[in-house]
View 1 (cartoon, rainbow, N blue to C red):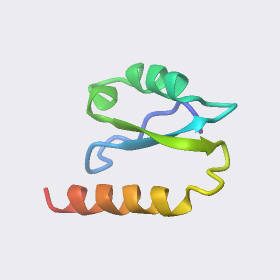
View 2 (view 1 turned 90 degrees about the vertical axis):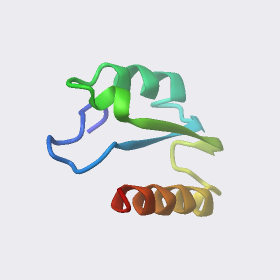
View 3 (view 1 turned 60 degrees about the horizontal axis):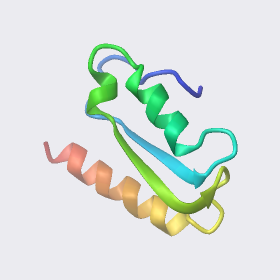
View 4 (view 1 turned 180 degrees about the vertical axis):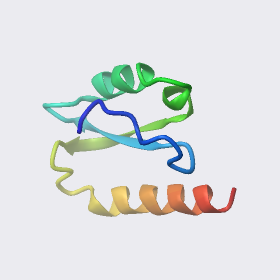
Amino acid sequence: MFGEPPAPGHGGPPLALAPERDQFGPPDTVRAVVDGWPDGIGSSTTVEVVDGADHFLMGAAADVGERVVDWIVTAISR
């Protein structure tokens, strides 16, 4: 659900992808929500903007996939 922080013990710093042209949750809104998360979760969350993408990430699947894979590889190698 939008605005809810990750569950405690989630295993690493979260990643939030914010589509640049998201009509429901634009990057500034996502950053504000993440900054409001408790217990240092917000400060450890990486917010990345997906350039040119709308809410449905049309045309950005490869970019999103690469970002998620990079994040997972980094998270499991800690």
